[in-house]
Amino acid sequence: MPAFFRFDRAIVRRPAASAVNGLRAVDRGAPDIDALRAEHDGYVETLRGLGLKVDVLPALEAYPDSMFVEDPALVFTEGAILLRPGAPTRFGETAEIAPAIRDHFGTVIALEAPGYSDGGDVMVTADAVYIGLSARTDTAGAEALVAALSSLGRKGVIVEPPPGVLHLKTACSMLDGETVLATAQLADAGLFPDLKRVVVPEGEEPVANALRVNDTVLIADGFPKTAALLRDRGYTVRELKLDEVMKLDAGLSCMSLRWLA
Ligand code: CIR
Image 1 (tube, rainbow, N blue to C red):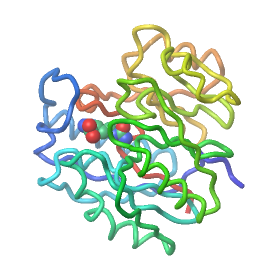
Image 2: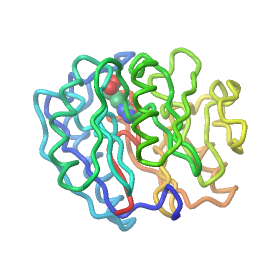
Image 3: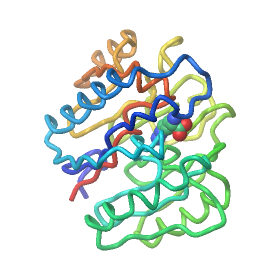
């Protein structure tokens, strides 16, 4: 099986003007909409430059956070799962993205009530799909997801990140087939005993949502210690400007659904 970070397709959604009202745990001011769109454009061009064919869905004004397409669905070569996002203002995003998902995938499993789960709480590794419990993903949603993954032939493993983490992948992400980049807080929680760990230097915690795409590790720019650490370890690192995206508690993985067709 090709590595789980090999991709040739992606779906993204243009930011809506309403993104200035997107959810955020700490209000550091609304993002500048033009700069947010420029960051999104840069992200799409980067994915294309790395060899992915990218479908760009139209902006959805009714859903301020709908540019974060990772949360309402989960996609694999073998099929897709339509999720039930845990934030009330985001729940309707699944119905909006479903047609694009059905266009691409023959096998589509729609999670049923009760329970909620966000794609940001899902981290795929070589032999498991980790599902983090959070304010967005509850036990019923995580268990329904484990069942859906099992019918796609994948092993779901439910983990409990430390409190205060928005999504599992806010605090960790896979760098290669066997190594996870994690904040010190998440690394100390010992959720992934079988993985090698690279711990984010103190003060650079928001960089933990990195995104490995083919041979490149994408990280947010402005985190020089982490960039140097990863380069020292031999990774090909590309830094992307994400200042406005990060005002919405989001990062690199949140803005796309990626798969190997
Ligand atoms: C939210 O709170 O839902 C958005 N402002 C950010 C979503 C980030 N998505 C992700 O981590 N997958």
